[in-house]
Length: 382
Image 1 (cartoon, rainbow, N blue to C red):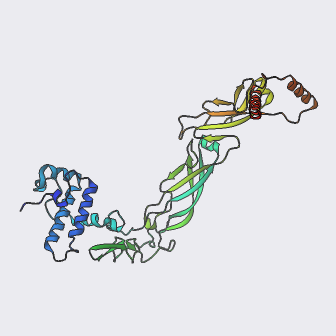
Image 2: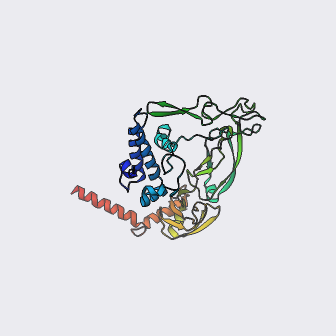
Image 3: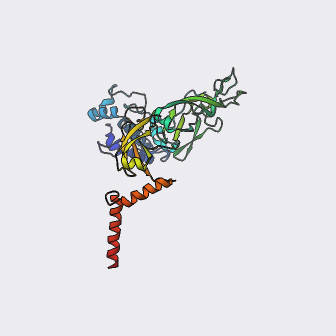
């Protein structure tokens, strides 16, 4: 008797994608599952057939061979796949079981751990908040931090068992850490009540760690902060988080950077901004001023005569570097013209003389503004 076409068995088109195949398989498997059709030999055979079809079509290499040669692709060793299952395609019900029930068991297939005396869980990731100065972000730095964490227990080597003994494979779950039970036509998986998911039991726990395989300790780490880091930059130190239980891998340490406010500079990406007050005389007559830079030096700027508050000057290459070096941004200097205060009698006399001799050409912006105000008032009173 010739086999039915795999695509027809699943009820999909030949160009069906992986998601469509999976959805069709699940629908058919739910319908023909033996637990839902007890004593129905035809339903059981149908279940095997759709499982075999899906096992082939979900594998890109097998599917390509099937599309080219049909069922003959898996006869006499063609196309590979002879795993001793049901049918020439090497169909294995354990794979279908995982495929069908994986999502009901936490997603990810629920495969058993083999030979697992070391059945602990991966250590937790840790977060460390670190504040640095803007100068540190500009130059980069290396620093030491102290992190309270869990580390592997030295006496037992992280196994949790007293030196000279070993954890034993859990007899309840056989080292899987989970047990399965049938409920109707569903298979339910839960954490093993004996080993609590570890896959192993310790009959003689380590006296130093109480069988956990790890102890609390403060760890000192060297941290390298690259140039150009910004507020919220995250640095990952792999394997420097909490130690895993019973020899399992450690977690990671994540360092979150914050940058202290600077008294002189404001940052926007790779740009720096600095407001610089200048005397009224310098703004009026022109001259040179010195301004600070983030690298700890000074830069000279030529201020033209008649400079107003808010005028900006760009210093190229005096901003912040990109992360890990390379391009460096600019610094923007914004002038703030300072009004004289605490004048002497002579200085006041000079200012009064200046005011008397001043005309529209001396302060064109203020004269123009008040002229517009006067015109507006005149229009409103007519």
